[in-house]
Amino acid sequence: MRLSGILIGLMSFAIIGLFHPVVIKCEYYFGARVWPAFLAAGIGFLLLSLLPDSVIVSSTLGVLGFTCLWSIGELREQRRRVERGWFPENPNRKKRG
Image (cartoon, rainbow, N blue to C red; front, top):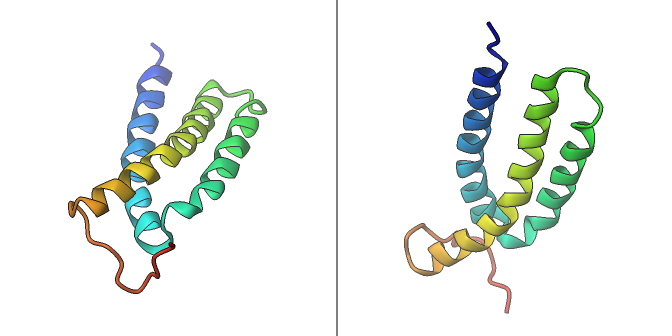
């Protein structure tokens, strides 16, 4: 019996669930301008996913990479949610004009 599919699914669920608050916090403290860090991390994790022999490790790194890339769009969406008043705006962060 192979449990690798269940383990990969569990890791995917955990990574996506972890990134939800990460995106919210990053937008709060840094704004959407932090997107290059997510781009670099995403590309890095995708490249790293090519190296392991383990399907589970490779899949987990791939999911992590694509989740970082997906987060770039979510940062912009989070900014819109803040503008709509759905999430608090950081009063200590200067607005960029």
